[in-house]
Image 1: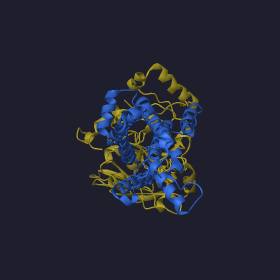
Image 2: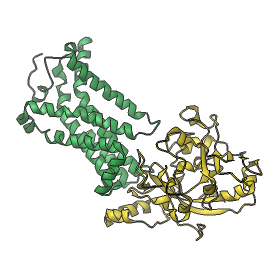
Image 3: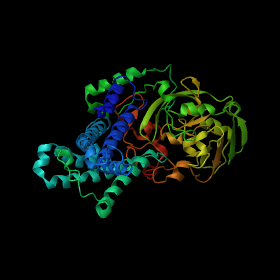
Image 4: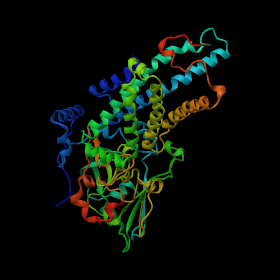
Length: 216
Length: 289
């Protein structure tokens, strides 16, 4: 899976001294970036699926006019979400180990002095139940609750971006690009929820995973 | 006790040894790294010190500055001395430093962002230059100005901050024997990205106080403004003393990563120069950024 590539690049970089002049910074920023990216990707799956369907239907393409055509990206969402959690754990471990050396008093001190760490810690904390409840058998057992719980991923997305925003230096503009993407994705959700016109009643995405035919 | 750190030939560890040392300390256990209070002055490899810079006049990309800074013309270069002094003047760099004792010092350098290095500087003590200028009684502060030259300093074409860069010291800080005007490092002329042809080195303060490419020195009675304390007063103050207990909203000041190492180490009060400079500051001073 290509999602592993960034991790191995960091690990390899560590061993061959290729992490740049400030290796700690490269490790933290690299792992954080991929955690953020996978988080946004997991939030993008449903909107992108709907946009692609709309696009293909509008331009009358041979493939892609049905929501079900894009079911495979919904099935990818679990792995994307788990990789977000994975990179978040790597990112946090690097901080806890290389920076704090697992000194929990120092961690509490850090949290009280720098607010962005609070956002980051919360984001990781919220990812834990999401990761734990990702396997299929738990999803089946939870029924409706599963979906409600996983709406926490919106909160995680916001926390991740705010974490980055709060720590970015003046003049670092990259964060605003991703903040814009997140805004777009959340805006889509809001519109889809509020306006019947945007709502697709035929498939709420939950069926895509189980391979059942949608009522298109 | 003399603060003079003139040393014999310094030890230059290569980068692999640093990574090895870092990994070795992982084996020893993390606690020992944090407990380390005394300081080794193992010099940062030249390649790292000259390739990792904050020099917004050129770029915000630390590694790009080394390339972009080559556009700067450092010869000819004039420095003006003005303000509350008996002998103001306008000098070429060589003239300014002529007949002054050259010193060679190995100092810790701590950036406010949380990275640090150990650099062997060559230059003169600022107090020797100021003694020649003869500050008038009542003079209290020395400010330093860099240049505004967007034709060569490409970062200045964006009006991200007011140019030229200005920094300042209290007169007693400026007259301290630790304070240098540096013209060289690692026994070579200052590279352009490190502040050629003349830069300030105040080792007990965060690196942003050690202004590069000085073109003007001005002595004043009242406290002058400085670029960063104007731009972000909640984060940068006039003093800028390295103080692990004074929290910064973005970077921890309790720990730092030494260039060439991976694991952070504890930051020392006044960057390890507490014995030499503590007497300059009142209890209230220490609570200010």
